[in-house]
Structures are given as structure tokens and as C-alpha cells.
Length: 119
Image 1: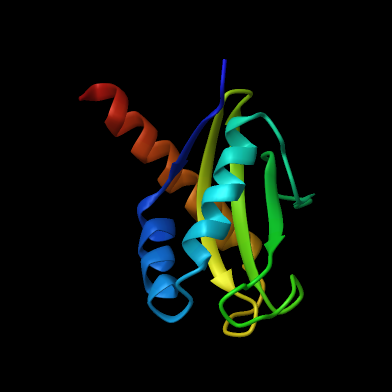
Image 2: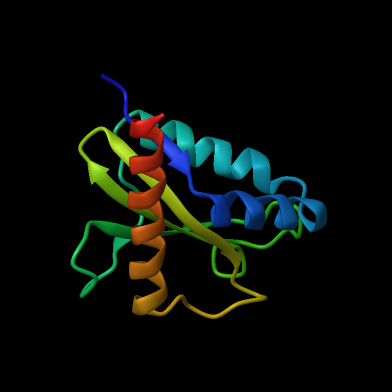
């Protein structure tokens, strides 16, 4: 059974904003989603969060930068077959996401999941 991958609202908004400046980010994120749907878990696990949260480095093909100057996607593995994309940012524009912001994003994912199940 393939993994269900879903972006929460803040992720979707940031992705749309980044796509205006870096159009190829959509293709890069689509490849990541395909990998996640096929049960790959790329990136490094973020310690001390209390959940299975990973940060993956993606290259910025629009700016011809490698992974170090590219994008970061933070995702949360809710269940073995459910992944939430929490945020995306350009490493050249933002610093690392603090743990309390990651935890708040996870709560937003839980809320979105609960809202989906009650509809």
C-alpha cells in the first residue's frame, strides 16, 4: 500500500510563494513526494522533537545551486503509510526551523487530519 503524502496549509502557501521565484521547485517537490509515496524516507531525522520528523535537502534547479543553497523540506511521518509535509523554505532566505515551530506544525497536521476524518 503506497504512502499518502499531504502538505498542510502553511507548506502549500510557502511552496506557491517559492514557485513564483523558483519555478522548478514544483518538479523537485513532486520527485520528493513520489519518493515518499514509494516508502522512501529521505533526509535526516530531527532529534528531540518527540515525533518522526525529517529534514531533507533539495537542490534549487532554478538558481543552479546544489543542495547546500537549495531548499529544505520538513516532513512528519504520522503512520507508516501517512506523511505530512510541514514546511519548505529556501536555505538562502531562512534559517533552520526551531523545535517549537516544528511541534506547532505537527499539531496543525493533527488538526487537519481530524478535520478530514469528521467531514
